[in-house]
Each structure stands twice: as C-alpha cells, then as structure tokens.
Length: 323
Image (cartoon, rainbow, N blue to C red; front, side, top):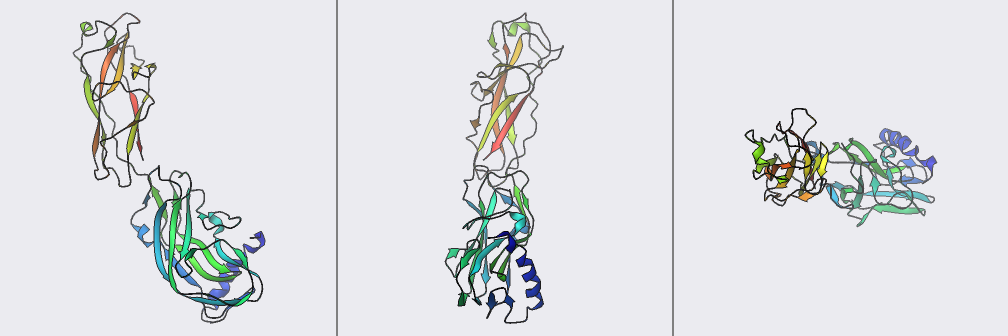
C-alpha cells in the first residue's frame, strides 16, 4: 500500500455519510451497485470486565473474540484496485500481505474472519477490474490475539480498528465499542511480619549452624483472580547475603542487633530455600481464591566473630509470579 492512499478513507467517510440513502456511490475506480457501508461494533462484553491473560500465554493464542451478523455487498471496479482491510493508522502500519493487524505496541493484534468467504481477510492487495464483485451476508468474527510480550497497563481505546474496502469504497467499518483493558491476573499478597521470639539466650547458639527452633510462617495469597494457571515464588535479600544457596541473610545494619547471628529461610519441611531461585507453589489450584505458601525460618550462628546478644531484625522480599 502506498503512503498516498492513507488519507483517502477519511474523505470517503464524509461522502458516504452524505449519500447514505443513495444506492450507488462513486468511490475512486469502484462503485457500489447494491451496497451501503456497514459498521460492525465489536466488544460489547468488554464493558463489564477487562481481559485477563496469563503471562505465559503462547503467542498466537486467541484471547477474545466476538461474532456479529453482517450484510451483503455488491460493487464494481473499472480498473485494478486495492481490496482488503485497512488498519487504522493509530494502531500501526502494515507492509505486505498480512491477516493479523497490530493494536499498537500492546502485544495484542486482531484479525477478521469472514464466514461467507471462509477466510481471514488480508491487508490491501491489488485485484483486477470486475463488474460483479460481491460478498454474501454472513457472520463476521473479530479475534484478539496475543502476538508478543504484553506491555504493562495495556489499554486499547474504543473506536475504529480498521475498514474493509476496495479502493475508497468502504464496505465495512470494524469498531471497538469498549476499550480493551488488560488485567494482570494476580492475588493480594500482604506483608508478613514474622515473630521469631524474644526468649533466646546465648546458650541457644552453641555452635555454627541454625538453632533448633524453627519458626513457621505463611505467605498469604488472597482474592486470586481467574486466569492464573500456576504460581511461583522466589526470595530476594534486602540485607547482605551470607550464603545464597542455603538461604542465609545477614541481620539488618542496626547497632542493637546481635553479632555473629544471621537468618536462614526454609520451606515447610526445613529444607533451605536458595535466594533468587524460582520455586513452584504446587498447592495452587485454578478453582481456589485464597492460599498460603508455608515456609519457615531460623536464626543461624555464623561462627566468624564473637557472639554477642542483641535484637534479631532483618527483612527479605518475596517475589510471587502469577502465570
């Protein structure tokens, strides 16, 4: 498609609106013989909720579709013309023969299935002159497809997606009646204060290694949305790392904290959790809405300096991924 053809659909829109009651409307080399422009308004069901798409959804997956009834068209063209879908330039550009049209840089695209033609319509392509072009009445389906990495806070405004046309003769307008808002499927995960206890003595740390007292705690997942297939988690240290493989982190840099003491993170069974390592939460189910990830922690004597009493405060960040 040459760049010089882009302004022409707007001019045709004005003319077609003015002559909407006419059965014949001239438009470049093509003339409608028994046809008026039809506007198809897709996306009515998007009014109440946005799209929730798991992060690991494969490219090419149809994430939304809507089907509407469409009218027939008859027209003629006196010269070689450009027939196909013209993408609204605000959503991007198309070069070559394509049936998938981008929706900006959102990671989503759309395509149009014409039931009467048994095909997805392509971008503008040259076709020869013909006195009897026609499209029968039938259903038309809009499909929204994941075609790339989804950007944060995706919002595709309502309005014109594109037009099906032959030269400047617009046959159908494909509108989106409600904005597409992409919801990142997730759960509410509140902060978790863990009370490690205050009744320790220096005799509880006779040698290098963890204490016998292991404190259980949970990472809560609440109000989980639909669309999540699996959950993984990892731990990131907020203080210096003592031993990443064993999940041992230093206490915070506070003069009141104990000396030669660190904290070790473990799973429910007491096995060390390596830092910056992704673990699956196997108890997650798609039918549930609230869960607990059971973990545990223990103080750990380093054995590198003199043991001194004090507070035992530190913090770590739990990163939960919803896929």
